[in-house]
Amino acid sequence: MGNQNIAVGSGAIAKSAGVVDQARTDLKARLNTLQGQMEQVKAHWEGAGAGAFQNVQNAWTVQAKDLVDILDHFRENLISNDKQYTSDDQMSSDLLSKYSAQMGGK
Image (cartoon, rainbow, N blue to C red; front, side):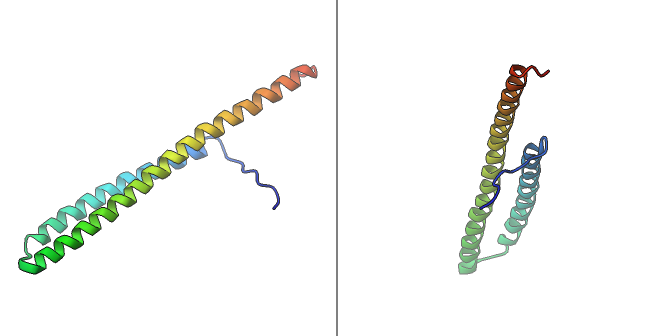
C-alpha cells in the first residue's frame, strides 16, 4: 500500500477546525434567517395545506439540525486529532533529542 504517513503543517488541523466552526456559524445564521422566512410564509397557509407545509417545515428543521450536528462532530474530531498529533509530534521530538544527547549531539 505504500507510505501511509501524513505530514501536517504547524497548526493546519486547528486552522481546519476553525474553518469548520466558521462554516457552522454561518450556516446556523442562514438557517435561522430561512426559518424566519418560512414562518412568514406559513402564516398564509390554511387548512390541509397548512398541515402539509408544517410537516415539510418540521422535516426540513430536523435535517438542518442534523447538518449542524455533523459540522459540530467534524470540528470536535479535528480538535481531538490536533491534540493527538501535537502530543505524538512532541513525543517524537523528545525521543530524538534524547537519542541525540546520548550520541553526544547537541
